[in-house]
Length: 261
Image (cartoon, helix red, strand yellow):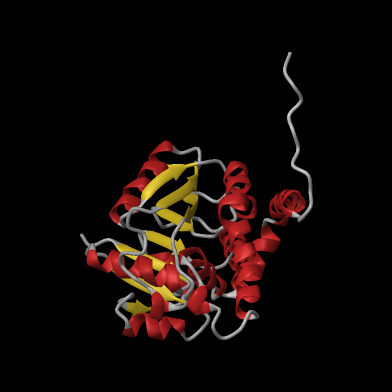
């Protein structure tokens, strides 16, 4: 019997899930509050456009592929709904508010695929987006449910990694959110350097420019959701940069080690 997947939010991540799921033989329903759902259907990321209630009532697996605030709102709406689905996941980049919003919701696993690109929308989606990428998830307390998610993540090409929400958010504040914040700031400085600046970029500079083209609205929401962890990391980096600038300042005498006895 063909399994049915429902996707709420048919942007880059949702449409990429749909493309790969259809390759695996799943029947995919899509729902979105924007016209992205029609483009996702044209691109072959979903089989049919569905209403929200129809999707939840008829799908074996459901992915809420929206930014964190919308995902929290959706989960809150479902908390008092008896699940007919076997597995419900989200894909938001910050997990603590998601876990809180889903408290008491059955058959749910909070997840985060460490995949994407600087683009947005189904036009930039790819069935290979998750290949060999980490797909983190916060263990649900139901080992069978978690194994079910791991099986699906591997089928989509990813490497599932269990990590509790608090630990996840602390790590990605440094490994994902802070680098993206720097990319926005540095890419702006590079562009201000003149028309020939791109031609004089090395690989690191080009990567910074690429990341700087990411959606500022999407990332503003991510930064705000994880601000209590991103801000201290950013301030610590500022102190390190100040120290490095002091060390590089002309005329500064190099520090000498005290003689050892």
